[in-house]
Length: 184
Image (cartoon, rainbow, N blue to C red; front, side):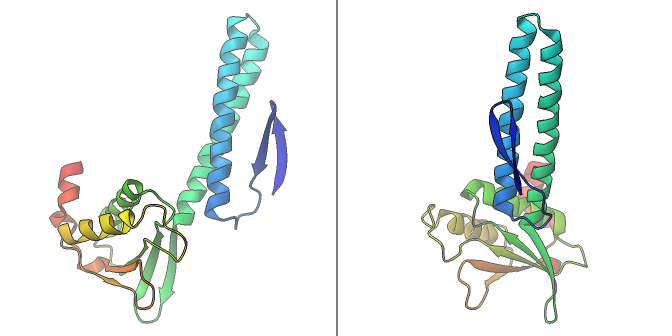
């Protein structure tokens, strides 16, 4: 990782493929903020009649837009972690403990809709809470459990890991999920 200075903004650029989710999210946010700053400066330069500067600033804005998108895509890939388990077949881990309750529920719905009934994926391991302090006071956990029960999705809390649920994907019929019908 190294620092880069653009237009008065300091950036932490991600250069290692194995950086974690939080670093990627921070980099994406910095690039989105820089893009906005460059675009605003480009508009100001254009209004003052300095087309050369406006063009340069617009190109810098496009550069940061692309970098922000790349960081977003990499961070999305970090959310899912696929592992092979001898006893359970393919297990996909979806870590939701860093997300706000509504965002966590939306991500869970997206992954259930996408992965249900795909034979190569047997289980979805959903991490809702960890031992870290929960600023949502259990709301994320309650929303996820209520959703699973409402949709009649069978789940079990992983033994010895409260806040971690194992959902058997091959038992879910996507056509019977209420939220799929509503969102289509």
